[in-house]
Length: 109
Image (tube, rainbow, N blue to C red; front, side, top):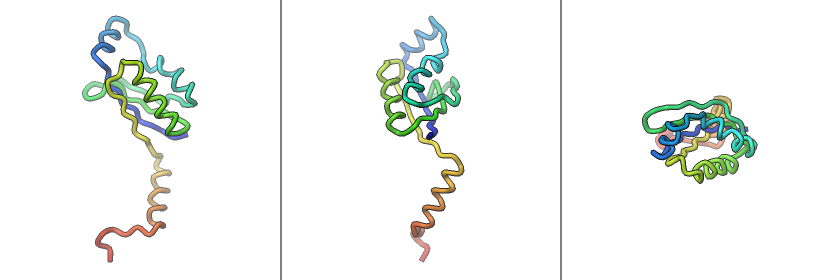
């Protein structure tokens, strides 16, 4: 399965609701993630541009997009950013594939 970094910024209304009723929203999202065939690797509260970051495993891009739509449709997130992640092994494989495709830098003649 593929890994994805998610970054979420909450709305003011969501923060107000959480102050009134503190809860782990990562656990609230778990059934949705698992219902789409994925799993939560880890998640953290942050401060700054985003309020939550998480690493998920999802079966494919369509499932990751469906999660983004589902969470965004809930109204508590003003931003839901998804970044596909590669393992080092996948990255090295991509580099080797680039080299075997005949890649030449602009000034390599």
